[in-house]
Length: 433
Ligand SMILES: [Zn+2]
Image 1 (tube, rainbow, N blue to C red):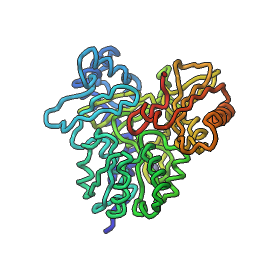
Image 2 (cartoon, helix red, strand yellow):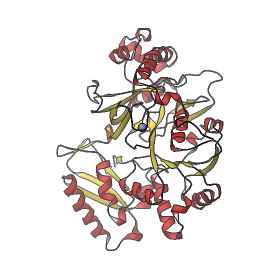
Image 3 (cartoon, rainbow, N blue to C red):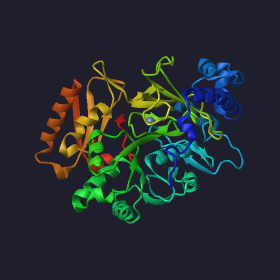
Image 4 (spheres, helix red, strand yellow):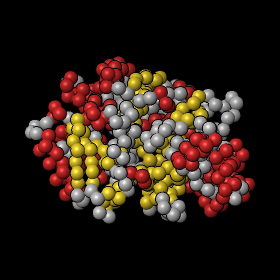
């Protein structure tokens, strides 16, 4: 049976169509948010803005107020509102409660409707990777946070195989892959990939055979490092990176691997200067701001994500016109040392180049935005030490201080200890202590 290349014809809609669609959708979602989401209503009152004046994206960009995570937390605490003033209760529409990931603070509850924007996005992404009705799909959950978002996959006629993202599940993943020959896995995260690498080394199984049926696997949780990309490629597996689009949708890269696609029928994205909030042109670095166009239960409007990105609205080689963006890091992760701005991903390649620290586990210690030196805690695998830990420390120190060009202080800890500092699927890359 032949299927279309894209699941939804909207994926290849023209730029003019998408612009029209957004101009038509923005007023309605703004009115809904102002009428029913208390934080948005408060922000509009403070800014003297009325959603009835929003007739286009242009008008929206000129007057609509921004919100950020702190606004939501303050509203939650002062009004005893668990949803932080951004949730709307519509009887019969809320089918489950999820939360944000809580990477940079307390998780915020998010009500889920039957077909949420992240679910719609993932179905398009998995279809583009090659998942088709009748296929098996391995779903690895690092928490049950997103586990309720299953309905649409099932409607596509796909059978899910559920595993938890824990090293103890590795033999089951191998067995399920050999027995059911799934086409897509969703998703891998760094600690599990590292465990997989060690498992392959210890057991001698052939990863190319184990993963031979997969057309792709989704990778999420944090940026994918160059070393892990190469390792997974040697298993014959193509990774597609994914992340949350500021909690309003999902966003995944396509086969061109040239940025995350933001589906513009589901969300409007823009970039601003993180200090002045002035608009930043496409192609330049700015903070990503997202606006849902469809979520009536959690209408996040002009939500500042804290991610530094570069947006590209030119058509993509995959055939889609929907915008793409690259993430450079979190605005709050930026550290200044001797006037030099440093983001964690600059450190990644240097750390993972050493065999003992190949997993790239590290944290930048950032007590203030401006620090006199670059202070890094790095996790190492004691089993891979060939000399003393001090010699490794000296090697890392020389490499980092030379390549980054600032004074560097390194603290070495065993990987297992460092991993205890984060949730199961990632560690905070920047920490205060
Ligand atoms: Zn693309």
